[in-house]
Image (cartoon, rainbow, N blue to C red; front, side, top):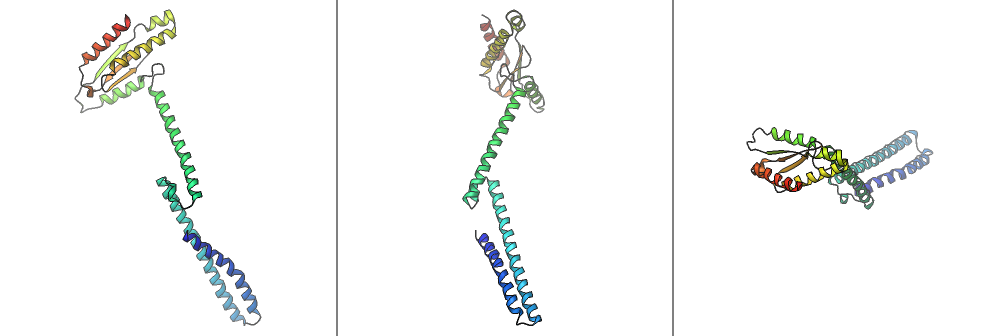
Length: 228
């Protein structure tokens, strides 16, 4: 604020002195020698130029200071750093628009990620996610623990599609997906995938430390109960 006031005062002084210096030169022209008049006008113009230069530099310094304050406010995302209420309101509006755009971008990225790795019918992870996770698991060179992989085929899908239509087949696949998800939910570190039309995969990470026969037994009991 003080820098702004100083630069404004210098500018006002420069503008005010200009006509006064011109009037002084006109008044002295009639009674002064040419040499004296030249010296007076020269020193007056020099002072006037210096005054304008100081005002120009002060204004540039003020703008540079304002730029630094704005950069700091943007880096901190804090409108309170700015001096005036108008600037604070402008920055707050700018930050609000930026936050909305950022959230929208993250939302679109999440949607694209889900479309790429999620099965539309069952909402399980799909073949691409299965390949990604299996590749990551196999690349653990120093991991001596054993993960559990179970492959499941819904054998009645083709028959249902042929006899009752695809809607019945879709309902059957959803039932199988829900059944598998329910059974493996008690195993830590599990992932369930639909890797093709009738094929599912269950991957249980080594952290679960559960005997594979236990998972197979639970799945068999659940499928036997479903078929009754």
